[in-house]
Image 1 (cartoon, rainbow, N blue to C red):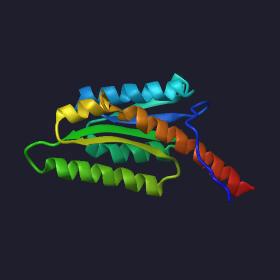
Image 2 (cartoon, one colour):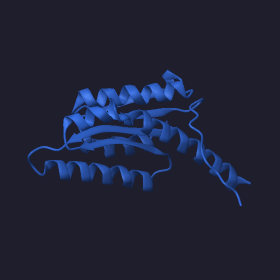
Image 3 (cartoon, rainbow, N blue to C red):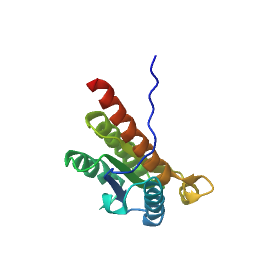
Amino acid sequence: MAELSGTPRGEGRRIAVVASRFNESITRALVDGALDALVRHGTSFDDIDIIWVPGAWELPLAVRSAMASERYDAVVALGAVIRGDTPHFDYVAGEASRGLADAVREGEIPVGFGLLTCDNIEQAEARAGGINGNKGWDAALAALEMADLMQHLDATDES
């Protein structure tokens, strides 16, 4: 029986960070966390591209485009959707999440999921470098780990 897993290694990997400008104070903290994680795990700063989109709704299209470019070993999707007084939250959060999941299923490279869906700004702040850590950091680590695992699986397929 073989057990395979990845290690969050960034050396030699090109990474796209796709981030929503909406709720920018939260998203910038997520981007900072992702960049910190990537660089600390060996990704050269010059091998990271940050792609800004207007909001969470636009994340899936930009992620798919980054994946299709064949420039990247992994993509990190970051954004924050905060519940308001209308059902808009449900549509945006649900469809952006579904769009990112579809991109992962149809794509060939990993996507780290860092889209916060929170009831209020305090929850978002807690997850963007506050008491609950930084989900941008977590999404970047997951993307690196999966890129490494995919490389191992590809090597296993070839043998």
